[in-house]
Image (cartoon, rainbow, N blue to C red; front, side):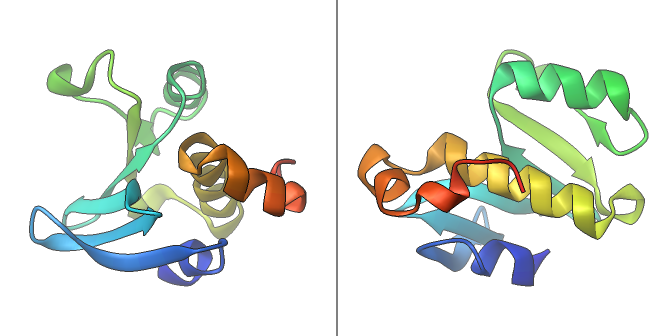
Length: 109
């Protein structure tokens, strides 16, 4: 997951709430929530689709309802899914000018 995130344009590693996190121009893309659970910023429609289509991998908690993030059980996730999810998160979070500089990142992988 770390290698996938850092391969995205201008993504930097840091911390959030004391856990590893990844940001693009100071905007959070993803962070480790607890052992084995990743929080990924994502459009609400995508969040709902992921949870409904793959509930063993993607989920939400009551305090995250209505908030644009999805929780990922890392043990249930695969590389292809994580690549798609983190790329979608980058597209969701990255500023417009950065997206214009990286048009190849606007299409789903």
